[in-house]
Image 1 (cartoon, rainbow, N blue to C red):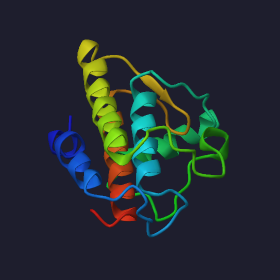
Image 2: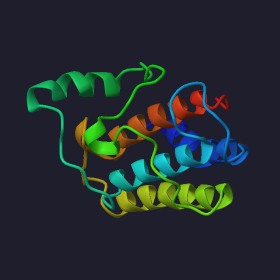
Image 3: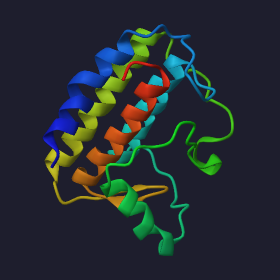
Image 4: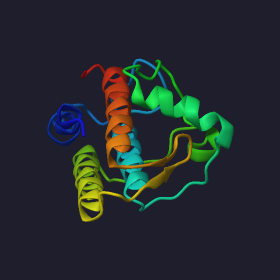
Length: 155
C-alpha cells in the first residue's frame, strides 16, 4: 500500500479543497469547486460500494487501463469520465453550501478506508478500470484528487 498517497488523500486534500470558495472556477471543465467536492465524494462512494455503475470498458481493454493505473502517469487536463457514468453537464449541487460538501467529502473518504479495513481482500467495481482492491483504489483516488487539485490550482 502506498502510505504517502493515502496520507495525501486522507489528510492533505480536504484542507486544500476547504479553502476554495464554492463558486471557484477551475482551469478546465464545467464544475465549480463545490460540484468538484461533491463529485470526488461520489467517487469515494463508488470505491466503498455505496454507488454502483456498470463496467463500460470492454474486458480486452482492462489490462491497458490497469497499466495506466499502476503507472506514475497523471490524468490529462480535461479528462472526462464516460458520459454514461456522469453525463455531459456538471451535476446539480447536493449540499447546501461548500462547508457541507467538504464534510461529505471527509465522510466519504473515511467510509472508503473503513470499508476496506473490514475486509482487505474485497474488490469493488470502477466503471472504467474494472474490479479494484484497496491498493489499486488508493492509486486511482490519488490520481483523481491530484487531477482536481490541479484543476482548481490547489495542487
